[in-house]
Length: 294
Image 1 (tube, rainbow, N blue to C red):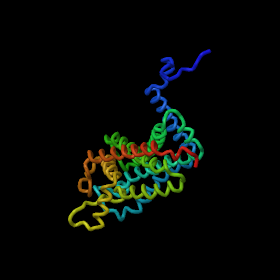
Image 2 (cartoon, rainbow, N blue to C red):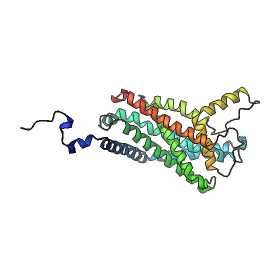
Image 3 (spheres, helix red, strand yellow):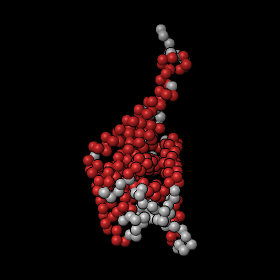
Image 4 (cartoon, rainbow, N blue to C red):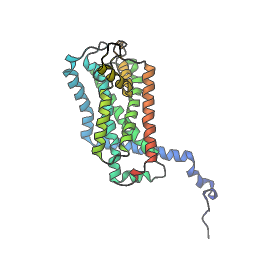
């Protein structure tokens, strides 16, 4: 009668190969890919969500662009519809991050998340799959909107299109990472929406979306100083400055309030994306609250 081995080391070499780091990593990436693919399938199965994802930013851009154009002072030879264009791209990414990461709460209630967490691949594929799936959807929506804008002649990035696409991808990763930070410990979708609207909407509004970041000169009022400091602390402000520079490469924005260099803008954007993903990962590793159905 055969006996079971006393330890893994007594198994044949071909049987122990399944426990190698490379095999575990491959299995984790496969799980992450399936979770990302699931986000795409769920998105395109909801036709109203697809329609809203395209129509809502377009409606915002047209309504705000035409309604506020008379009250806008030209910044860098731009009219308001052109100035508001990068803000519309950021809005697309922001809303997509909200709807993509809220699925974490829904998956937990349905029991799907518990089934994923007990898999031997660990927790990191959940973060990678959710973030990559949501970021890819947001990126494609932003690119589609940018293509529409280019077709009507509002903007022509030209040779700056590749850096612009990379910047949009980084912003999408940062927003989805921030969404995961809020969604992972959350128990209700209502609370998730409340926190995201309380945090993300002011972040979007105070990033130079509707007006340039004011310069903090000696003649600036206390209100301008407070507003200027808040907007400078906001990492999305630096992404917005660089996005506007890439969308309209032929225009000089050096005289339009606070305009940091491209190196600073890219550095802040990369650090913001890395920080949100790192915090989300640490939160997922330390929290076992989601392991039970609420």
